[in-house]
Amino acid sequence: MKLYLYNTLTRQKEEFQPLFSDYVGLYTCGPTVYNYAHIGNLRTYIFEDVLKRVLRFNGFTVKHVMNITDVGHLTGDRDMGEDKLEKGAAREGRSAWDIAEMYTIAFQEDMDRLNLAPPDIWCKATETIPEQIALIETLEAKGYTYATGDGIYFDTARFKDYTKLSHQNLEALQEGARVERNPEKRNATDFALWKFSPKDEQRQMEWPSPWGVGFPGWHIECSAMSMKFLGDHLDIHCGGTDHIDVHHTNEIAQSEAATGKPFFRFWMHGAFLNIAGGKKMAKSAGNFLTIQYALIEQGIDPMAYRYAAFQTHYRNPMEYSDAAIQGAQNGLSHLRNQVRHIRDACTEGDAKMPGEVYEELKAKFLTALNDDLNMPRAMAVVQEVLKSDMPPAWKLETVLAFDRVLGFDLDRVGEGEALPEEVQTRITAREKARQEKNWALSDQLRDEIQALGYVVQDGKDGMKVIKK
Image 1 (cartoon, one colour):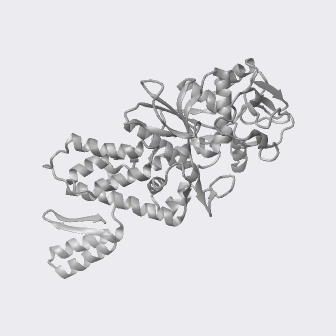
Image 2 (tube, one colour; image 1 turned 180 degrees about the vertical axis):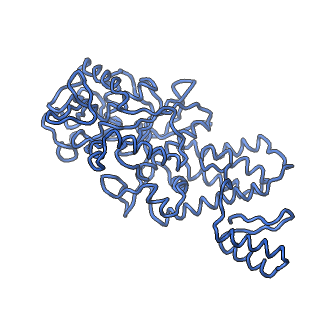
Image 3 (cartoon, rainbow, N blue to C red; image 1 turned 30 degrees about the horizontal axis):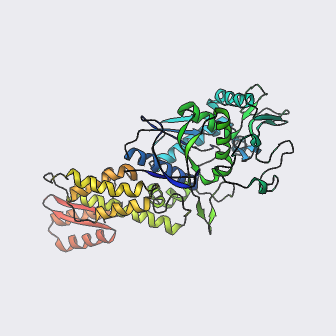
């Protein structure tokens, strides 16, 4: 079955086929590790995780690279302002190196909480400085760079089709209006490849270079890292929609100027998470929510956020509210209970599902997935299976296979699920009442347990209590 993905570069869905027969090269822009990731950031990583799982579900081998930006990303995306790592270090009274390590670990913990499969290769900007310098030297030799008082810049006027990804109107882009003003720049859209350290102070993160002591620009990092680990003509590059106009546009310009080849063939972008009346969630706006605060401290399973993300297509804005996340929590609990019930209904003698039946169901699931990762429709297919009149064993086999994409770990439903103390206390009391043949008290305790959201099943092997 053909896989169609929306390509921001062409603004249409296109059939995807990898460049190489042995793997799909996938590069996803990782976090700038100066603070915790907010749930808006994490929505993009959920979409990218689904993309990787869908590629694998289609039989492709995926080589996934994700970067860690631990230097060079300034507070102004067009190369003005403070380095975000240095700013984070000053905020917390720690070194920039310590800040980067702490928030890298925190990000990886958030990935675990959302069951995001880790990349095959993690790469850090600070660990690929030689590759970045070499790439800038190539651009310099080809005449694409010039020096200013604060760094080495890429001359965007020298690169044809600079706006082919963003489709911006450059005449309307006035420096000082929508971008920071730098009187030494030749063009408003020119960007820093290498920034010089201030002459009157020593930065915590700086390196020698042919042009002077300094640090790399934000954009050159991703080009150097993706080409180091995947090559110079690549399959899929992902990120948030906020990367289109500046970061990814600049990656394309510098990479294709250096190699003379098309960079990535597919560019895919996830839409924003909105709060407070449609305003996007962002650290700069001060309205960002972390997994710890928004979910865990509110008694919400982080996996409920993964479930919530599947209710909206990744290219559409997603609205966040307490009611929406509670609804997702309820939906996830219902899904887990459905799986629990069909598992309990299975027996050792159940007939094996015919291969043609599974292939038919898989085709229906893939029809949704392969239409540009249509997860709302894919989730509807899952419910059709669960509510069908197929034997429980067939349902279980199918849903667990689909969970390779969903990523809810449905095969582990029931593992280590401790009953609340108020339920366990009543179970103990009811077992005693039954031993004493106090049937009235036994019935009363059964009703109390069920009122707490659990089902009591009495059988020859004793009492079983499961969540509704």
